[in-house]
Length: 621
Picture 1 (cartoon, rainbow, N blue to C red):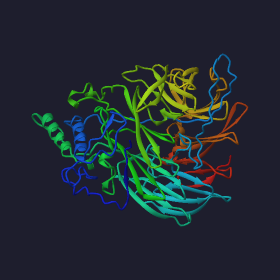
Picture 2: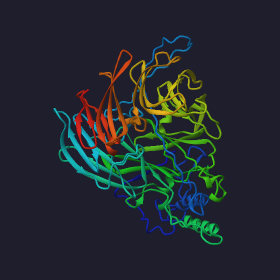
Picture 3: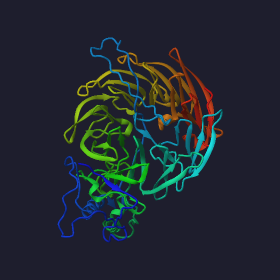
Picture 4: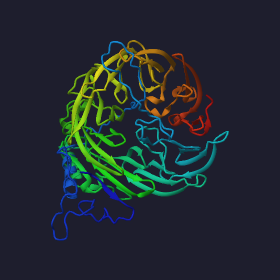
């Protein structure tokens, strides 16, 4: 089975305006004789279904929408975002005593030739800066700047205005960011009505040319590059309707009835993304969850080849979720759940702003990636909450997930392994009771190891052996004040954590960098700490792209932000490692909102490009 739609710039699609009563028409529900054609897709199992027609798809959205609208409009439209860490390369010693099995090891790495610190090796991520040899590209204020970094100082080659794009400080929104593939840049920009995807030919970097501009309704929440294929995850939120509010006698009843009538009058153009005003996905290629309690909305994965940007494919699931994880051959979507149940007037404690708890079970849908195609292959669920994409990892046919507390699981955290069994994702193994009463701050995945950090008052660091996915084992733990919300390997036996220093009772003090010795996973140790001024924070905690490791020089570069008399200020912390210690040198580099776009980019020459809001220079190490 696969769900996908091929879209080209010359395909004749029925216009939205002509689709009276539906507002979205594509494909054909029957042939000229009135006989319905055979279904184009067969879903892997009953967790997702297709409706068979555009009319039925619209009705499924309306039915769910009517249940989620009240006297004031959409009920409990709440979303919570967080950011953690991902992937690691850290071969480990087998000399640890008291462990009967061989110690886990890995050869995975998160370095990327484009200069971005990524979650998954082989899956590049959109960023404000990309490099290819001596060419450095960066986005600034809606412009694509090309620099030659081969000389004594960076030299500006060209400036290309990207229409309808702007920079953003939100890590999960790739607005004003780019990917670089095959001599072309693909730039993602945010607009008031959606997202622009601009393809720029760089065969002559001194004179780039824009070859395609695609405007997509909806917000882009992720952009990934695997091979030569760019994939963009687009969220289509609940329709913005002219809802009324209660007034007068029977006000709530009248308002609720009016608002529900607005939902019943919606068209598919209100629920699904469009490209240049035309449908972005075929009705037959929108999978509808059979669990009607999942968050209402649409998550669409658009795939394109920058060499032919007008050729695209699209796959969609009728649920809203920002938790999407890509490996080199899989896409996993963790479906969201509303933070409320039933109409607003019936919601417990809604008057105090406290929504009811969700069920605590998270459905997961798995898609196989092959070229530009995405095929739905399996689904399952886990008990617990999944904070973000960094909580998921796939290797060797096993999906591993770090889950937090929920109404079902109580107050502890767990690491769960899943495997594909036919069309089902089934639980294979788990480790429970990690950081009872605490919150997961960061997760780092190895081929056969997980490092999990939780925090409430102290910073427990857990080492979990995943060599046998059916029987994961907690090897050791370390409890210290503060916490690390970004982790990175520094060779075979060292791990650095960027986060917050804290008192013994959990009061945060300021940013810190902690060096860990993980030679013996049964007894991980903190061997050095660099503490920064009060009121500072490590940028890598919310955006791992603000950390760079230079293994040849044994130097870690971390952006540290804080508030000073000059306003928001960003520094580069140059951490040099020797003999199990860290020495620190601070370089003030930026002020204002531009601190979020500071990047430290390793170049093929061995130098490091320092990219700030207004300049590109070389950092003196």
